[in-house]
Picture: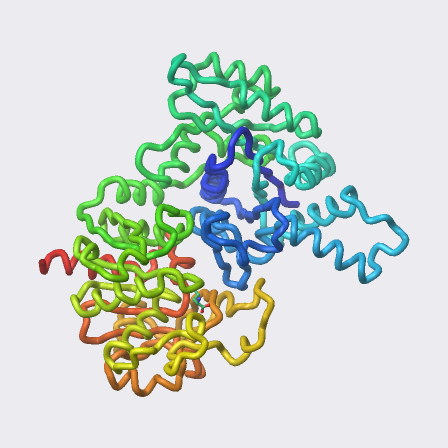
Length: 533
Ligand code: GLN
């Protein structure tokens, strides 16, 4: 039978519950256990697919096409677990399936209630992650203890823990122990109060993980242990890491979190193997080279909106022993003047929806194309590459995507046939993993070192094949297509040092130990560009 770990958060949001959970999962895997991870989000959207990145950051897409919370990216990257539609449940997803069942007569005769119907549905979702072969299921509860929204999830955790019995399910509460500068002291009160909220609803955390800025004194640990009813040994400090989130697993291992969790779950405390991670961390902390990349996006300052892209650069940096500094450049500011871009060694134009910033992205691409600046265009970024080329090289000045100009005379990017007339917005795009066939001899094929690849998608619009022959003849080569050749998946410019666009999102598949070839290629091209200068 699988064992269960629930991670709750207290005091404030943004404590890095996702990174902590993923780091612990990595440690447990390094002991030889098979771990599944999932996240519950207490909002009413059925999935984050319809939300602006301003709300919850990037929407992370899994192979099976589920639009999920960005924490699932940490799970896949750090812990190396595979996420799917059972890995992210929102209140909306839970409620809508209960309501749908009620309409079908599934509860005939009963009054459908929060307890037991909603909580049963949540418990079923927890169990759904315990597939054959899984030793430990780790479930992160989004939100902060005390939120009205997360109450049904916490109630389900209370019931689940009770039913599973001692040693089969534990709760780890991640909390903040702030250092108050004016008094020069750490304060435990917010954590005491947050744990007392959990006590009030019948959840008694087994482990307290305390986010701290400075080292925690013995006195604070004792206080937390006493007031929070958690044995002294199970009050674990998780101090802010100095340089990189890649330090977190080591920090938690140093405090013995993995061993304590295994003891509590009555699992053998096997030896852990962290050599690979140590090597990785060493590369992260001691890069030999550096480069600067501009991310031409539209959510200035909101790094979470492009989380997986930043992570992919970190992975490429690890592979090439390079510190990659990636700055966000507001696309709208480039509409009339792109000189800002000359300070960078390479460019990345990411995906996006809606017209704001598109003209700036097109201007940036024109600049990069004509100045030999290495560039990767992702999804909307690739679409903008096609628009820019059609405008500048084919002289189709009005070329556009029908997403931005429905009546354009040159719809070089257009809706897929099956998307015409679709009015609903949630979960209706081309989503998830699709195979792609690369063109022999292309830069793409060289980078991937194989011809059949699979990448994750999230878009409605596509390269319009009606312009394919003309664009190719003019120099913008198609280097990847769907296996039946009906959809263009990648384009590149052979005469350019590195100018490549993909309709999919490579950033979702990059891993610390398996950096994505398109990012490694871009960083390498950035380094070459630097040397040339
Ligand atoms: N808005 C574009 C489309 O729907 C691109 C989407 C994206 O970049 N993820 O096709």
